[in-house]
Image 1 (cartoon, helix red, strand yellow):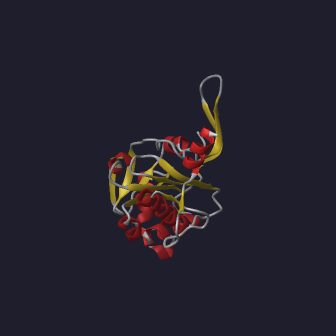
Image 2: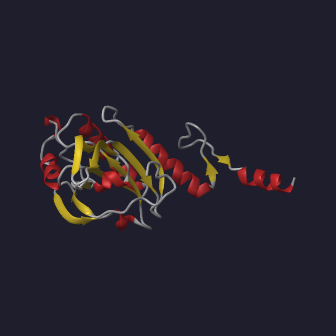
Image 3: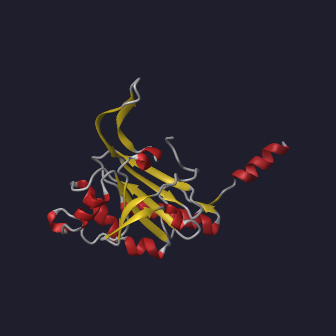
Length: 210
């Protein structure tokens, strides 16, 4: 599937931990359709080193995202019990206590596969048996999804490279600026900068007449 930008975000229903403690059986992004933007980000594993820095970084900006009608949702291939256990560990001991946005449990790895962020290689033999080389975990994929469920931005990092929450916020701001003003955002655009009027349609109209 590769690039999802411009396409409908793959739908899923899975178990998740919400509000830092409650396990729910049927979590879906469909609840946000028509209501909120979504920043969905995948991370490789619970109880690791880089991952908690990202999870806490998004939590630190959560109120700012929510003020812009953006829901933050994280996912990994760990179980919901693993998510819950990690949420009980204090930050100073490597845990993610205090994280309140949903953590999705992609235990069958179909969500990571459908978003094309599943790391590791696997195949079926002639007998239909699945074999995999290495662990099947998620890359650090991030997807900005609009209120209509369309992916507007995506990034995918290898596990060694943590993401920029500032850049995720910048892309939210840029998308909302475009939707509100109809002006496109040039390189390094940030809130307070001017946009550009998209003249492509005018140029195309001119060329069609000459």
